[in-house]
Image (cartoon, one colour):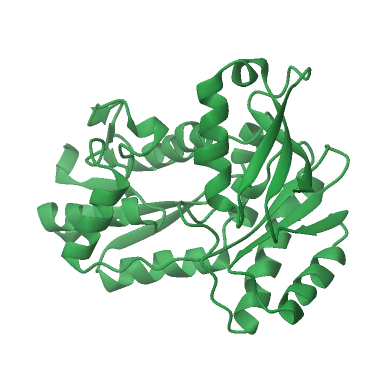
Length: 303
């Protein structure tokens, strides 16, 4: 390890928080630096606050590095958190580390953490053989509390993952998902409502942004009405649907995904369902758009 220093790709979530503390225990705080990619309009203000507070509390040096909106190039071809992690986040942190080893929170529960390789291409993944349950147990054992934004049950911090279609126009598609999710969390906070899950998915054809409001448990009617009113007033949002029961999503998928049952199952059960307030079913359709590499939710109906 060059100069004995380790850089941790740090999001503020459970996985990278555990890696940060283990690195501090093994190397000492002076040899560990946390590096967070700032996704600019797609990073929650609350997320920045959580990351700063964690570093300060544990005496670790921390640096934000700009993404230069590189993730928008990934999302032009459809939602792909894995591609963002691999092609943007990891690349930028490695560039900042200048040849030093980079540690990530990739684990056995992540599709990109299942290689079984602890060190690959300059990235060290100490949790690669550890699943989410074990990570939670280790955090509990260490007495480490990880603050949550409240947007989802799993990975938090990036609003772009709630854009469930291709990002062609950042000032339309990107602005809609960024603004909508800040509005939602702000209104809930103003009313003192603390949900298990709260996010706004942006779906629809490329010419129309439909906001799907997910809050679990559902807030009082007065609060939800205020959320709908404020979202409806946004110029980049063309319609609002409150997810207050089971939903059927109409999903266009690239031929590679459409023809692969395992891929379709993962998108439904691993990618989408955990971030919806109620059960979902999917009506799959094969896309004829060769620019779509993943999937796009074009419509939603209440069951």
